[in-house]
Image (cartoon, rainbow, N blue to C red; front, top):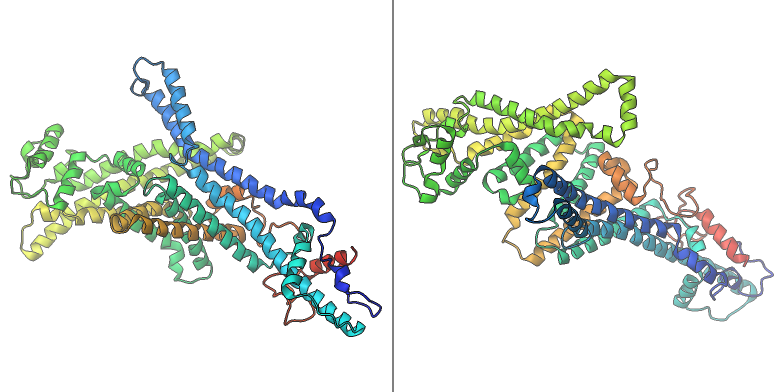
Length: 589
């Protein structure tokens, strides 16, 4: 604002900043309410709800369709047309996708992301307006003092609260939009807005869903937030150098140890579909699993008479495998034969491991080949262009990627079997020789063999390329934490305390993740940048840009105004040129 001249007779602030609302305020109110930032926030609400709905509904639709295609007689009610039954089933799935009680992922995403964008818009506006009003009030105070000195006006100035309120009311959105907050202040606003919206989202879901229904979403957010911290730690070299290369391997091994141990003994600790998938891939007879669990709990005792419901567990298995039923009689044997553990495949542990690897590779190829062909389905034009340019390289790279992924899963399956066999047939015999004692299967087949197998299987991730290991670690880590959470929290804390802990965990994690993708995009994994950036309308090319309407930042001034003691600090506003233009416009009104 230009300084007052010696010929000024009235208070200069009345011309520079009228107390009454300017006439053009009413005309700008409707358009300012639907500002570009607010429209963008509404689009984020729609996009996030749509993405959540698709993620929640698409797998169920595919499962329903495959069920009718593979076995229409089993899923079609008697006396009903299969086509009509299919349409009804699909409509039920589509309807359930809109229900917060059935799934709720769409509402969770909309409140988290859409609420964050809306809160950020209003918080940005409010803080900009408050900071601008503080600055203009200070300039008015200086002009009032100058006018009093030159004109000898001894009238008492308005009180600071009245002066600040009138200044705040007189500011229009056009004035506010010309102010740019410093980047550190905007980062704090992003953190606060994302924390509040995430907390509101998870509290809303707790009221709609059953107990533990949202924990997998919360743990996913925790893992992704930890990944952001991991990127920061590696970039700043906070740990040893090997941590960046092999940290993902260590995380994968520990996570798989928890997951597989829980699957062997307490599968209810894992998410239901994930536990079912492990069971299908392991191809371990249910009776053998029940035997392992009975040995751990002490319900099954070798060389003793056992309860009727467990006495014939393995005798029936031996009969089905064509083996002597006495090989599975707990009362007659002190140890379980390897051939029974191998389910009649072979007596050799090494041959059995090789058989499991080949079997796992064949099954895995059927899983991973469509996965690696998915890019061809999503962008067929680009794929066929590559195929025409270099067909040998394109086909061989697809087949090699499929073979590598299949080898990883086959090695995973084989190692858990070999870990159990190593304990039973290698380590325990050496222990018996050293101690001079004979152990029954209650000791040999206790938790240590399965624990060793659960630990060893995680090293299969070394088959994959280094850049894939981190993604795979992030995939299994939420499931491992889910298992640990169920193990530690179940029955030990009240529902209210548990929900409060989960709400804080989810809100803090989403705050870290959204602040990272907004301001430190290179610290967020590319797999998260694409979809999350699209939902939040964050462009890939920028880093450190603000995405706010108004004058671009030209520099970080130290203070605003002539006096440092009363000026707005640098952390609030950093564009003095924008403020000067506002003052010039107001002085011309």
